[in-house]
Image 1 (tube, rainbow, N blue to C red):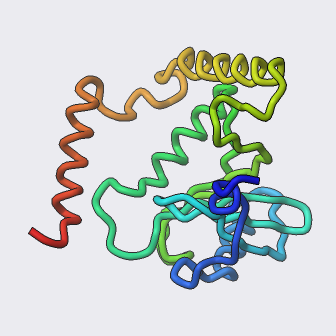
Image 2 (tube, rainbow, N blue to C red; image 1 turned 90 degrees about the horizontal axis):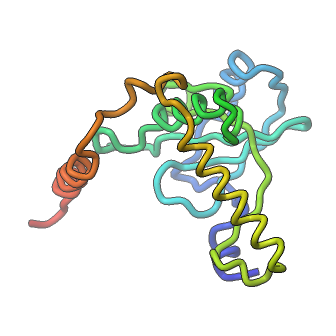
Length: 190
């Protein structure tokens, strides 16, 4: 196990600043997540720098919750609604994405907007050269990665319901402009 695994892999108890009303979440899930039955245990995934992410577990199912962080946020940052919309649309087109159970934009439930998706077991490879794998296993992973990217690029965004998603053209110019504005808005010293 590498130092990266120790730091970024797995779960930990939820940090005090990121705790929320578990009973309120369970009530919401009972009403909006098909097949949900508690009791619920909650842990926070290690790592990540943007939207807090939690592992939710019941006796019969595992889920992932991603939410906006608490506190004052910059406009357009932490847009969990966008994440939800894109992953749901891609999954409906047969792309390998977790099943999306629901989006909650009502801050009164757990304090910020969030969504619930299926927990998908997987492996994390920190070194893209995959030195610990046999050559044939590396080749299979690289081939699968390329096939997945090709599948992503073959999806018709209009047919997926994402035709109105984003503005066409000048993406980099807009991104640099937005990041510059966000940097200035977050500036603490001048």
